[in-house]
Amino acid sequence: MTNRSAGAGAPALDLSEQTETIVQESTAWLTGHSLDIAIAGAAGLGVALVLFGIRTLGCRLIAGGSAELKWRIVFARVLARTRPYFIAATSAALVAEIAETPPTILRLIQILFVVASAFQAAIWGRELILGYVEHKVGAEPDQSNLGSAVGIIRLLVTVALFAIAVIVILDNLGINVTGLVAGLGIGGIAIGLAAQGIFSDLFAALSIIFDRPFRRGDSITFGTTTGTVEQIGLKTTRVRSLTGEEVVISNAKLLDQQLQNWTLLQRRRVVMHFGVVYQVTPDMLAQIPEELKAIVERQPLASFDRAHAFQFGDSSIDFELVFHVETPDYTEFMTVRQGIMLDMMRRFAELGVDFAYPTQTTFTAAPDGKLVMPYPHVRMLAEADGEEGSSEPR
Image (cartoon, rainbow, N blue to C red):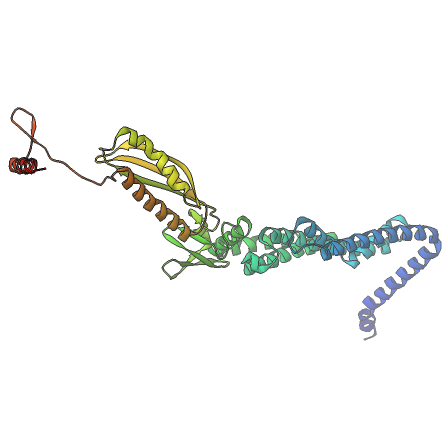
């Protein structure tokens, strides 16, 4: 029984002996190296003041910054996240290196410095990455319209960086982390393969965040669907089509096809084709482009580009008119286009220019090959009407 009690109390005894040894070494070090400790303490205090000054500068830059997130504010936020325990651990490590610190105390200070540095690096990295994300999508969640996706990014970045910090700390403490890293890698691969579809849509959502092909409220066209973006989620995007129904499409499929964003449209280009009859004289054909230019320029929102006769059609001489409407609004665009068409009809009527439409004329050939009137009695009636008209008294 006595031996068991002594054996049970051995760890406690060893711990008390180690503590007593550390106290004795510390006392001897403090009394024997007071000058070196004072010099190292002054240097450590200077380093601490510099780090606190940098931290204060970052806080002031954040307080005096604008609402818009800029790179200056991002770096200021990184500096402001400098933790006091990191500053204290850095100063202590500097003092321990300069002064002749006992090995036991030096090792303890080094361990504390490694732990503080690893967590501080994780905090700085997290702030820098999240600052970059917010710089790309906007600082406010309402501006990014992808608050849930940004939340997922925050979680993933935090977990990844602090996991790396823990692994670095364990490795510096002499613990073999090879098996842990291998296990995490295999587990990550397994999760990635199992949730491949989910991750593809998630990365597509991240592409929307960084590339910003559209935002909520934009009018877009993909495939045969045109509508307004109502919601951008982690997996799907919801679009309210022109016909009223809600169209739900996965982010990956949406980005895999050609996408037109009408909200970014600044002006609309119009290419208008029309034809005039072959009876129009060459001089009048040459005058038509100038007339079209004048018609377009009379519209306040229209700007003329070009107008040319470009081909001989089956029943018309075809023209191509190109102009721009300087507004993205579709209703105003159609109003300007209609006004130009009506002015063309009025002006062409004044000039005696007829618009062409598909027509065919049939001729009859005589035995000798000459073209003759296909209906002789019509010609006789026309001649008779002409004679009666000429015999009327004047």
